[in-house]
Image (cartoon, rainbow, N blue to C red; front, side):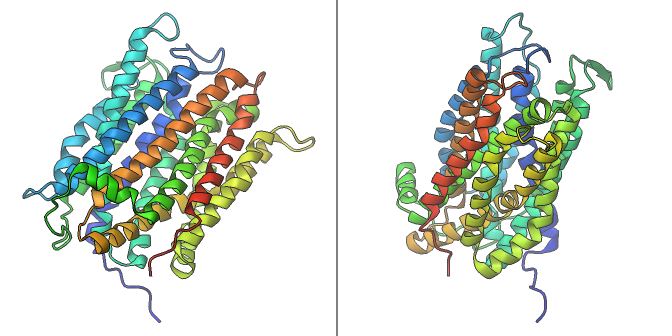
Length: 443
C-alpha cells in the first residue's frame, strides 16, 4: 500500500502553514517573559508591577476577549467580499497585532511598582494585542477545515502548522534570553533601554515575515455554504448545544491552563530551583519542544489508527502524571536538580505534541458535524469560541500563578508558589478530561 496522497496542494501548504510561526511565537514570548519583565525576581531588576496586578490585568484582558472573539468569528463567517471571508480580517488585524506586541516592551518610566501609568499602558496594549490576535488567527484557523477534508489531511496539515509553531518555540526558547541579555544597546540607529525591547522588535519582524504569505491563500470554492441568516446570539446558542464542542472545550480549558502555567513557571523553575542563569533556563523550553517535535510523527500515526480523541486523552493523562512532579525538583537527596528538572520536562514532550497537533483536527471534525446538522459552515465562529475557551484557561492560569507567586513565593528562599504550580495545572487537566470523557471521534 502506498503512502497517503497529499490532497492539500504543497503550494498552499507552503503559504498557509508558516503563519503558525507567528501564532506560536507571539503568545509564547508574552506568556514566558511578560511577568519576568514587569515583575522580576528580587534583586534581578526593577519591579514595575506586582505579580497579582499582572494576573488581574491578564484576567480582565481575557474576559474582554471572551466577548470579542465570538463576535469576530460570527462576523467572519458572515463576511462576503471579493477577497473572501478570511483575508480581510487577517489583513486588518496584522498591523495592530504587531505594533501592540512591540509596545508591550516599552512601558512608561515609573519610580515605584504599580504606577498608574504602567498599569494603564499594559492593560490597554494587552487589550489591543488580544483583539488583533483574535482577528488574525480566528480567520487563519478557520481556513483549515475548508482546505483539508479528511482525517489524514487534517492531522497532516495541522502537524505542518505545528512544526512552524515548534520552530517559533525553539526560536523563543533559544533566542529570547540572549536578546534580553543584551541590556541597553543601540541597534540600527535605535537606542533600546533594555534587551526586552530588542526582543519585542525582533519577534515582531519575524512574525511579519511569517504572516504575509497567508494573505495569498484563497478560500476553496464551495466551502462557504448557504447564506447565514442567524443572529449572533443564535450562533452562541448553536455552539452551546453541541455536545462534542462542549467536551472539546472543557479539555482545551484544562490543557491551556496547564500549558500556560508551565510556560510562566519555566524561567522561574530554571533560575530559582535548578540554579541556572536566564539563558540556560530558557533552554528548558527547548528540551520540551525538541522531544515534542520528535513525537509528532508518532502522534500522527496513532491519531489516524487509534482515533484523535483517544490520543488526546493519553496526552492529558501524561500531563497529570508529570506536572505535579515539577514541584519536587531539588528535593530528592542525591539527585541533581538540573537532571531531575530536565528529565521531567522531557517526559512532558508527548503530551505537548498532542496539544500541538490534534486540537485543530478535532475542531475541524466538530465543524463538519455542525454543518451537517445546521446547513451552515461556521468555521470562524467555532474557531472564535475555541479561542475564548483557551484564553479563559490561560487567564485562569496567569491569575492563579500570580497569586501563588505573590503569597507563596517564587524565589530560591521562598519557593512554595513555584512548587504548587504543577499541582494546580494537573488539577485543571483532570477536570478537562472529565468533560472530554464522552467525546467520540467522527466516523
